[in-house]
Image (cartoon, rainbow, N blue to C red; front, side):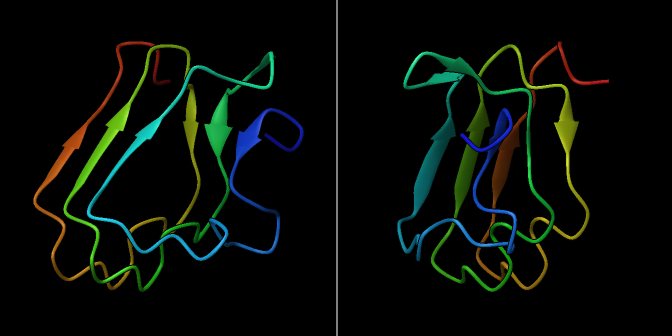
Length: 79
């Protein structure tokens, strides 16, 4: 997590190419409070995203052109 946000400030998720991802509540002991803009943009393999409790913010255009995305599970903590 960079500044408590999942992904990278440049809008990437380190080349993620999987079908499912869980956004954890903590990474290396740091609380994840949200995800950066455009993090999964053009991740065409992505089908299922699960946000664990604690995530409060989802950046802009996070799932743009995720043509196979079928399911997103949002936490109650989302603002």
